[in-house]
Amino acid sequence: MVQINFALKEVNCKVVYYGPGMSGKTTNLEIVHQKAPEENKGELTSISTDGDRTLFFDFMPLDLGNVAGMRTKFQLYTVPGQVYYNSTRKLVLQGVDGVIFVADSDPDKMDENIESYANLIENLEEYGKDVRELPHVLQYNKRDLPNALPVAEIDKRLNKFGVPTFEAVACTGEGVFPTLKTLAAMVLESIDKIDGRNPRKASGKPAAAPAPANAKPAPAPAPARAAAAPARAAAAPAKAAPAPARRPVAAPAAAAPAQARQVARPQAAAPARRAVAAPARAAETASSAPKGKKGKALGLVVGLSVLVIAAAAGVAFFFLGQ
Amino acid sequence: MAAQKRMSQNDRLRHDRLTFYKEDIDRIDKLLAEFLRLSGAKCALLIDKEGHLVTKRGELRTIDIDTISALVAGSFAATKEMARLLGEDEFTAMFHQGERDNIQLSLVGDRTLLTILFDDRTTVGMVRLYAGETAKKLADIYREAIDRPAGDSGLDQAYGSDAKKTLDKLFD
Image (cartoon, rainbow over the protein chains, first blue to last red):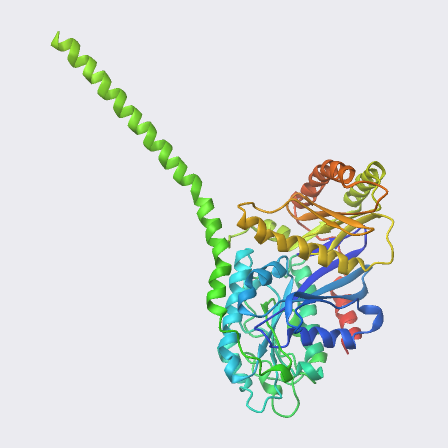
């Protein structure tokens, strides 16, 4: 939820890097931290395991500075990508204003990308949010892999809502800033869109054909595709970034450093997910409890009524018999 | 279970954006100042569950407020699953004890956290006592802000175009 604070003269927005484990989410944030001007960035805080896997989240404030008299700040978060950390991911998503979904271009990771994107949609729904109405972009990371899936193929399988896409090699910094810039512009645009004074209301529809993030003219549905061959999307998109930002979109992603790519996917994923779902089911059960109590009370009333009627009938027969 | 609901435009505005005007913050600041006077605590921060600072009062060392706010919100959120497992909706207070400084968190309404920093100049009992009372009063102010009809954000008309220029400058 965007917070507009006129006393502090601040606008605060929350952006989350989402995606499967090891896709490069934390690497994206590290690059932003390394390259952002000193006066614009805060500390990068990580709650991670000894093996540098994100345990809860990574966090970094990014101060855009004064925008029309308001100090505008983005709070950048990553989520743990591993399937079994879904509770944590859900918590970090609370109040999110924009999502960067970092997908892995490794062909073997495509199923994980799809699963993670579906998980994002599901988690947003639990907060009453429709992914199509949330500003989001997709980043196809690890484009330097020799066997990287063609962008068109990833697009076809992942980009259901036609949101802006970017190619990236996060570990070298390529594509990191164009992705963030476009998403940031989309989030700020959404403030105007939900503004009563602005005639451009959010339509609630997905951006059918977002303008490509790169400067090259490309077929509308596949923004990043055109940049694939000679110049990477990462290198070019900045200039045209404000344009796609006008489109309402949303979707998280996750990226992982290319060099750590060999880490095996946790096999315990599926059961762990079920374990995470348990509290939700418990909550549902709890919420249905009052209905059970009502049923019991009704049964009691009906039972008592039958007894009273039977007793009255007995008395009547007794007197009639007399 | 998907909790997706159809929302009216007004509900959606309130859902997507929270605006605090100076009058709201002035009232909150006054309450926080009174709380600090009564409890003897060093500092009080009001932080929303998204990790954004709403306002602060009292003495602050050179700590990174943005990071503290994010971590406080994260730490509070992390207890929600624990609470759920115990059959609670969520915990309404948390306490972190240090050698010198301590932090007491109290839930205000359903989306804000009153974060109190205090040391051995007072006691946790005093802080908790006054924090509870203050949280109730703050919840009323907060509710008014949330229930306020969502209309114009009050941002300058040039905000959108200025934002684009700022992004160009920062990222290019």
